[in-house]
Length: 465
Image (cartoon, rainbow, N blue to C red; front, side):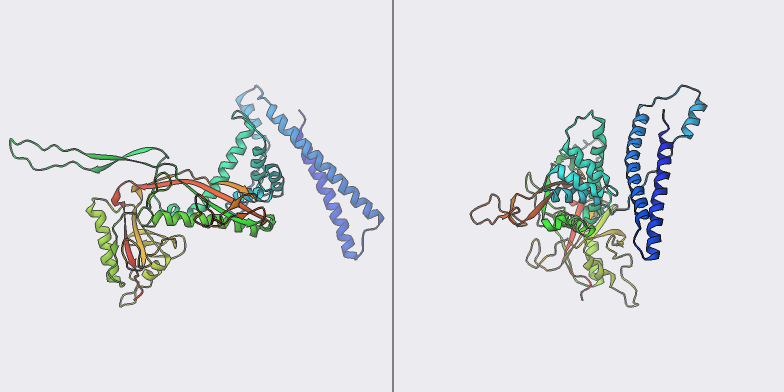
């Protein structure tokens, strides 16, 4: 077998020498402030032609080396000889990339957008990112060609697509309330889960008296495949801008849109279940504790009443988490006693974690809808502070976000589109306005295992006095 590794090393050394020679020629001319003379030009161009030839030959050598490695069979011999051969093998270096998380997924969307859905053209566009995100081109190339589940060449593209989708989900998850609550009970879609809604009874029994008999009460909860979807519309000019700032804009907008929607739907008391469409929020149907004041005494009084609801339902507070806005957390953090000491020193406002409040962890989000003063279930204006027991909240989430791109559709540019469209519906043609629509979809569902697993304080304006 040819020693391809030695040939590759030799040609790479020769190439490096030619590159160094050309650099020296250009530096000499720059130092002298002159252009290349005829001899220097001939030498430079000759070196450049040799470099191009070597590059092409190196490609062929690497292909041959890979083919030879695939066809190679183990040589019979002693274990010691085999171990020595393994130790003398070629060293393989794996280099990672330092691109921001979610870049692969964003570039996949950008390539689809710029090609207007043409997969072959999108794969060509993705070649420009081969150095930092080669998996984008691989995925798009795989999408062009058909294959079977037994085709070994298909395994890597499928894994890369799953990893890229998961990377976007990982980028999205810390930005949502759901992603920052530890201990949620993960369950599959379409699985019936029995839950106990009534217990047995036990009592004192006198001598010779019959013992009481009681029955337990159960029902079932099932999380179907609820789907969230959002569309981001960008101009063709923005899609063609391949700078990192354009990629970041598209990525951040997809993250923000999905995160804000999921957060609001997860905690808004007004969000009731829609059969076959969406789940109720975890606070829907809960009778809140109405804030009794704005000072620290009111905080303790209301928190005690809220926690008392858990204890009255024989539900431990272990694993519970507070969910509140940064504005309300700031109000708590600024409260001081007569000695100037913080009333609630455990709180921390750093955008990722709220620290602790009353000994329990805090999740901060500005997507918790406030009571405007005329909402349900109470009429007082103010924020909402939620206390949820994470292990009693069921979550079904496939962790992937699917993308589709079109430049020829007509859209209702509304956050709540009319269905079905009527005579008053205004449609925007993406083709006519030189725009591109990117649609993101995600399957997710949730539900409470026990009704009392979530409580909240309403009309909270603590620290405003």
